Length: 328
Length: 260
Image (tube, rainbow over all chains, first blue to last red; front, side, top):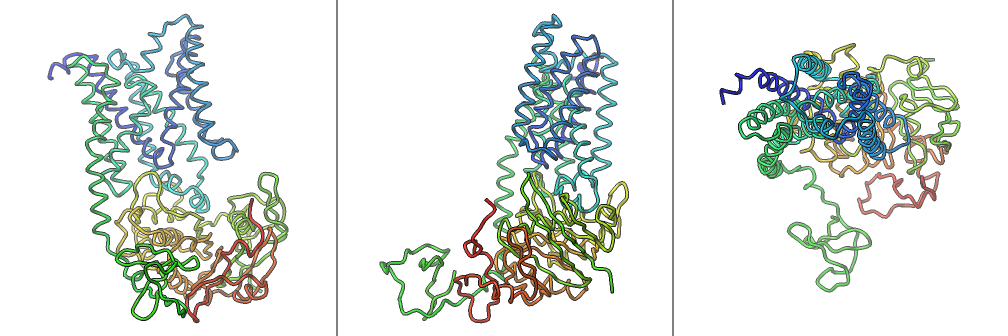
């Protein structure tokens, strides 16, 4: 285990893993809150076309991928905010266009599928010092904005209309979240790869929310889980000679599988301990006078209502109570 | 004459090429409790969404506190409760966290809560009778309690005008009674209230004036109970007893039309 740190490439791999392990769940929490968990996948596909553009033109693939991914993400956000296109159709178009364009352009550049694979599934052990610097700077930027603007970003993801009426420039922040998500996906393409980047944005959040009641705890726990899964993934892949990207994601998923029953148990205990609202049980609406006596086979369907039977009567329910009937 | 809190003149709103609000004019004066009633698709929700700037008006003018709405920037004076059945989002959040977002209009840049924010949030939760639920997850609350969380969020900004879009829809009777108490408190405090609703239920005695919309036009303006009698709406079959003041506007058939 200690051998890990002796190799410079492994040191770089671990630092890069920590960076993306922090940044991906940080921005991912907002995506999950907005119910846009799959946006990261769409961005990943478009970033693939960006990589291919880089391979074709000789630019740094990271640069062209960031630009295209950001353009795609912001496009989706604007379509969502102003357009008539439904979010899932727009996302689908992005998936197909991105992956087809990526493979097509890579072939034009005379590169093999193997080259593409390093971007699709990551190649964390081949990072150059320059790559690491880019990853560190961009991750720091994402985390700084996700934490620094947390009150505003939380508000617009919670209720966009209400925050707009509060004078918060919600659309601008929506575009900001989309842009940050694009940066995060492209940064993660070297660690877990474009196809799995979104997993690192969503899975730790899904795990964290099993155990928490507040946004703050979910956010902190998700970033923590992201870092732990990333470090453990790199270590395991080194020891067991497994591919690092998928190992990180599988470990993150294992975390979810382990916590899901705990979350279910916590939710069950909460509902059990929740006090009954006394105001509701004191409701005692008297039914109108009627000579008919409800009973088995009286012609009115009987429904079980907690500890007694209600009789369905002209679209409402009567419950026998002493000499009269209550409305239930 | 004092400036009306809301002044709407000759406003029309067009959504996807279809006129939804047609040349509506109305005033809400300071301290008034005004309700906007009507069936689904009558344009009431669209009208208030336009008033608060969420939708553009095709024509006409809207003034808030005497300022044309396009130039209006003092949004802390307006508390808005959108039409939502739940205060939940995709990630867990506590009642306090949600209510704190209502304080953002008091922050210029970074919105990290300070002491006065925390005081305002505690007060708002007190008003909606959820003072002891601040640390609970909103997901644990009933629908009526979540509506009260959204009202508290609007109140946390200390607004002069409270605009609510169907806060009573789908809320159980016990919660409606609590909401009525909350509104009575707000009326005592002099808050101006504009409320969109299907039915008023226990709120009826608190309301100063009702405006009824049909097909995007105002068809009645005046006393809440009169609104029902004058329009000869079908009497809803219910058994709330002789003291009930429920206004039967839920019956779609009585209105003879729908959004579709």
